[in-house]
Length: 181
Image 1 (cartoon, rainbow, N blue to C red):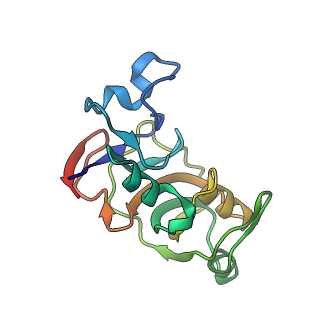
Image 2 (cartoon, one colour):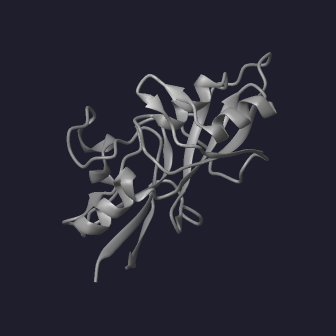
Image 3 (tube, rainbow, N blue to C red):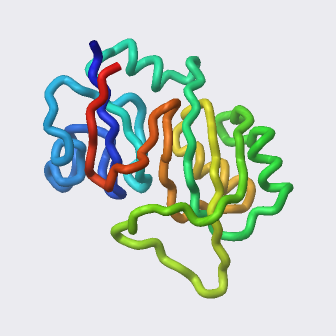
């Protein structure tokens, strides 16, 4: 039986157990004290939300490797108001420096019921912002941020809500739970 840990990774924490600049305070080591588990994929330091950790190499590969096309859903607070042209571009795939992305599921959503971010994002009175839901099935480096920027909607806050069947629902930042798979 494999162990799978669902972690709500806070903003500012690296998706690794060692190598942080602030000692262990900016790595997973200060959040998860379970030996033998490793992240199945990554979230950059500026992103929040669901990070899966496992002690099973096959499961880790099935979750993280792009060839398995595991869907990941993100909630992105973006600067600006997306029109159908921008959303259609995300749905069709966006040309990035490292090639075209696969088509994504993209839609505008009401602000999700999330925890407060620490530090909070910077609001600008004269620039509107809104939330979109984006579901992708690959994992290029900083892909969602680059996709939204490519259609003129820079990301202000990025939260990964789900990976496959697993969600961050019910987990506060820095908290985790173990499930058997």
